[in-house]
Amino acid sequence: MPATDLEQIVNLCKRRGFVYPSAEIYGGFRSSYDYGPLGSLMLRNVKDAWVRAMVQERDDVMLIDAAILGPHAVFEASGHLANFSDPLVDCTVCKKRFREDQLDERDCPQKMKGCTFTEARAFNLMFKTHAGPVEGEGTDVFMRPETAQGMFVNFANVLQTSRRKPPFGIAQVGKSFRNEITPGNFIFRTREFEQMEMEYFVPPAESAKWYEYWCQERMDWYIQYGIPADMLRLRAHESDELSHYSAGTSDIEFKFPWGWGELEGIAQRTDFDLKRHAEFSKQKLDYFDQATNERYVPFVVEPAAGANRTMAAFLLAAYDEDVINDEPRTVLRLHPRLAPYQIAVLPLSKKDTLMPLAKEIYSKLAKRYMCEFDETQAIGRRYRRQDEIGTPFCVTVDFDSLEDGAVTIRERDTTNQERVAISDLENVLRVKIGF
Ligand code: ATP
View 1 (cartoon, rainbow, N blue to C red):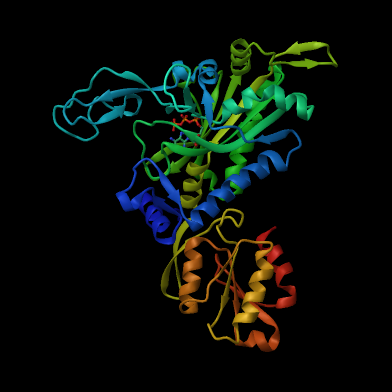
View 2 (cartoon, rainbow, N blue to C red):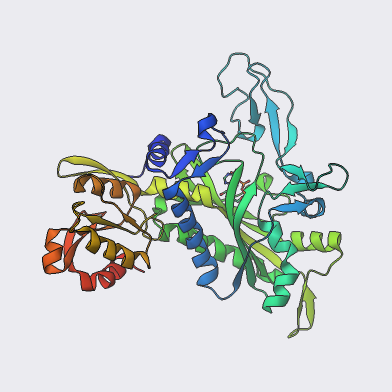
């Protein structure tokens, strides 16, 4: 059964080195987290799985990596300077700050008696800094609050260098920054996070069709990587929820322990962004179709996901507790493409006689897979550790291996063990792992 309490995952992440509170030795920094040896591997796997589906396995989407810092002009054109704000209210009694749209009643969530709130003020979520040694006029720069603007400002560059015609997409994975009023729920809402976004440029008349298409594709992606369908839902935005640019948005939501929460938004951004950037930059940002002799500004359908939230969802969904030989165990049933390690190589004993063979097997497998080599503790405890960090397969090298040239493969989900000739090991694992 998936985790029902966020603390189960928070504790496992800390204990096993997935995620640490940032700057912990100084008491922590509530709004950000650091990804440890296992978490950084898993986060990278989440992003790679996204790039695989969105770029590698298609022929119509290109990947870019744009700058994080952007000038005033970009965010003026995008509308972020004017519109990218949340309604901030202060409780006049407990002095805490809240997002007005997240209060479900006019009652302070801190449950203090007699709480009253100030009028809501628009609080811009962008982080502002300045470039160069002198502060002042014209040196203001912003940390991007979404990766999307990188795709719009590079639309003409990519169109020209890649010789595409709509429909085609530009994708990007990278950090974004928002000065959130209420960060929280572990890595669900932080001030610094990673996004996986794709702008799909289409002929205007095809926008609705592609919107449907991307809603379905993206739902399938989460299911393919192990989230049960009943923990996901696609929720269309009410008209008062829509962003300033959107003609229709649906969120893919995951059933978090505290309720449904957004993993990804799929928006019809129309021609808003390209038109605004064309207007502000005075550059042509359109497409000339030589077949029909028509010039038009493409419409955009945007699937925009968060890597960190998605990683939290994969961890929560994969978490399980069961009993093996009367012993309770915790197991992360992660998809092999998401697990930090696909394989652990475990010599049964630290004795010198086993080490060279175990190391040789590790070196071979590590060329293809992320592997861990672990020679500490009793073998049962090592299996438990691998179960808890989600490693789908352990390869155990024992004293018989020296005689029979075979090793044991142990499967995480079933704990079944199978003896396999070392000469067949790579092929057998390739079939079991699925890649
Ligand atoms: P929310 O309503 O939760 O603030 P949003 O609708 O503002 O999110 P989008 O602008 O659609 O979010 O951004 C796309 C994705 O980026 C979100 O679905 C989410 O996965 C991720 N994301 C946005 N803000 C944060 C954040 N503060 N921390 C972590 N991930 C975030």
